Length: 342
Ligand SMILES: [Zn+2]
Image (tube, rainbow, N blue to C red):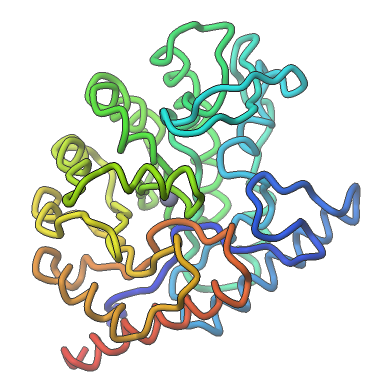
């Protein structure tokens, strides 16, 4: 029988300190050449081991082989200049120095496929691989070529689809697209955001997920959340589109957020990765707190569709903290399993 409440993470986990500087986004690698390749593989092994110890059922690569969830993908594409960077405002929230699109976007070779094959060899558990979504990619660079967010998104969707198919062939079970930008640009989601995402999953037979959150636990995001009022209803704007899409799973920020749980009603029938771990504070949840969040979600999600998870990636957290949070997630799910006798 299929295990109920399979545990997963959204994706990123802290890297070992010998690989890159901890608690920092875009942290540079500490190794190079062959040593870096070997170091990344060792990090993947450790990250798998820690997930298995914590009772995680759907394994991720912890994004150990990438510097950043968006820019590492873009870095491998043709048509992007990484040397001449521009400062842009990301999701209308914070400034970052980003690469520039200077020509036609193409993907000459696979980006994460070797990493995925490596991880696949180490475990028989299902593997989930995260890729950035087209809209979030568009929002994380400066376009000096297409001069249209929509046109650029279609180009990204095409190369994402190529990569996703190759990952599927490498044995990845679930491909997740990270689209935090969906929580900000509602009109664009409805005009072309969802359509370009559908293009990215076109022809895939594996499961597909979309992750939409309120961002990593960095100051700019935490400050933004304070301006959102007592009820966060952003999901309400985009859920109808998602409900009508071919995406199988939706990953949401729930624990400690002000998202009304009943919004999940709008995507009933989809598999929901319920964020039961807050990645924006340095306190480890108690198993009971996790169980409470899952219990609340169960009012609106059938148990076979509920996937306990984290609110977002844990890359910027101290390593022992992330480890503790993973164990709490697993213990919390066990409380519910026991309670329901499943
Ligand atoms: Zn996120």
